Image (cartoon, rainbow over all chains, first blue to last red; front, side, top):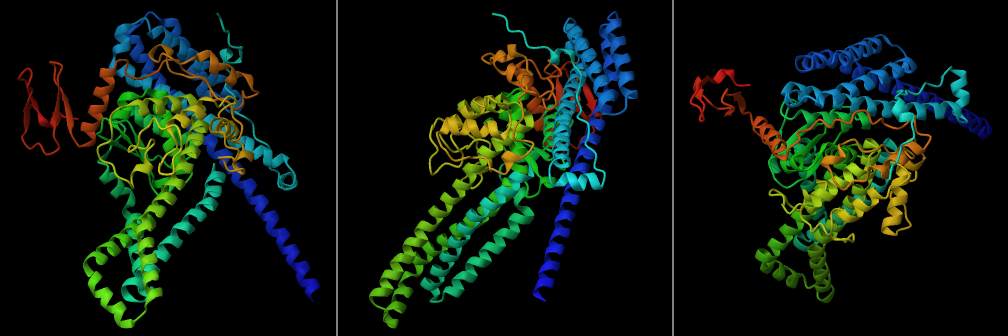
Length: 184
Length: 438
């Protein structure tokens, strides 16, 4: 009698354990999804801000046409990109274009003093930060999830219920790849 | 992140248990002493505790904000502060953006309140906004959000309630001894207790006098530990320990003291507003670890911004062998993360060595986890005067004042209770309709 009870107890314990592992995987996968949607929100926010910025800069620095066009082109490319890998590349290009735009703005004191421009610059700086921070949070979530799907014993459950590892989100910025130069 | 909260909870149980034990002991002795029955005393202690708990649970946040003179702001009042709080909300995966309050006080400081992560509030002083740059402000906000995520705000208010109950009980005891002492003495003599009674009476008296001090020590010990943890969390959220380190340095050298502050509210601030900041050692009576140590630890986080780096730096700086970060947290994804380099313009901030920090961000196989240094342009007012104006405007707006920009360059501030239909500019005499204010 006790033997049967003990056996049933062990079975029940095992089932609860498997449930726990499964639920843990689901929770982590949802965290990854949630973090990704957060990146999406911030990327869209940046896309929405750019036409405004370009209009403001045009008023003061109309003959910087090349830079402005490059920003618009990069923005339009980024809007159509889909999936972490492609979006990463497009957003990297957009970031580069924006950087050169702000570098150009340095040469126009009137533009730099413009309230509208300052407000837009703060919004864009914050958006860049948010993208960086949501990317950071997304990648942390992906790492946690991927670790779980690959490690024993959760990898067995992950294999059984088709939990696939997620992609990391990397922004391609050429300067970031270079080793920093230190000059003395 | 939640591992920390969980591990904190286990440790908190010890502190809460000690505090509760003290409260029960206090109640028992109190009852025995004044009503000859420990049960009555326990009941009194319990009732006081329940009442304070109810107030703290439902109104604690608002009471605290009101006591410190904080006013809520909206996004248009101070966009930069708002953006920074939102950035840190994203980095910390907090479920909701905390409400933001400004305190009109020249002393730079900040605190967080709220019993749940989804209904928390962060308050900063105007002095803080005037003194710090964007990276530093980000560090301070990250530290406060760290307190919210680690559930320190809830825990400290729980301990605070028990401390308050003990203080009240001790106060009642002291007063009744003073005024009702005579009646008590006659009762003792009629019951004829003798020697043991006297000894018990003295022991009870000593306890009643010592309990509040003991309770405060427990409270402070709990508070100190949490500051290190919040610093570690801030490093992880921002991936830039230097931001908070330099903010702490600036706050601690500020000679201005907070105006509205008391013993119970002090532990909630980023830096203890009541103490001499230069103290190098952790004392038994301090709410916060020494600022010097905190800055040193943050600055010596060589291997990145993760918990392991903070833990190693903590041991190196304090010379202690025990870990400050719960071991369970060292196993998570947050354990090892590289730092990023400073974003702000180095010209506006002399004394920071950029080349020193850059390799740590690049060196590790951390392309995946490094937050990018995306934009060099620091979007903040260039001159200190512009920064101060931005802050004062935010304070006016938080109190319901509306603004009318006059063509002469002045900005008219219209009080919320302004009744007349138009308003005259004091500088140039132009008339503006009061309704045009925004």
